[in-house]
Image (cartoon, rainbow, N blue to C red; front, side, top):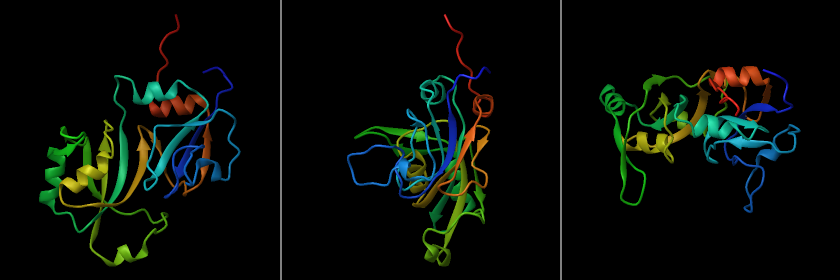
Length: 203
């Protein structure tokens, strides 16, 4: 790909930070990160303030449409810490799809592309150390859809409220061992290739 001057970043969004640079509210913003982002940088999609993990930033205004508004679905994977130990029966219930509310009186059957039991990565800091002392499970859950608070609603539907939610990958772009608050810049070819994005032909 030719050099367009556009910039592409991946960050590990920390807990208790919103996915924006400007807000009328007194919240922790992306500008608090120790990185000099160029003018025009914006987040692609969002993670809510209590969610963590992989967040993409760019000066390329085309990316949101290509990644989240296209007809081609894109895989997103999450590590989820839930209350209590998840049984094989509950895991199977989640695999088969669960009903979640998406409106005042509207429900949707949400079915993951994949879900397995997982282990907490050792490099991730503890947010609430006392949770290690009570029964819990970690799940690795992959979706190709993005309803509002979908992951939290899905695990709640099987009786296991979410305690921690970390997005670990979007397509082949992985968080890896990037620590909370860290930023990595990517070249355009790597960014497009790992996200499996293709620009439409001009004209």
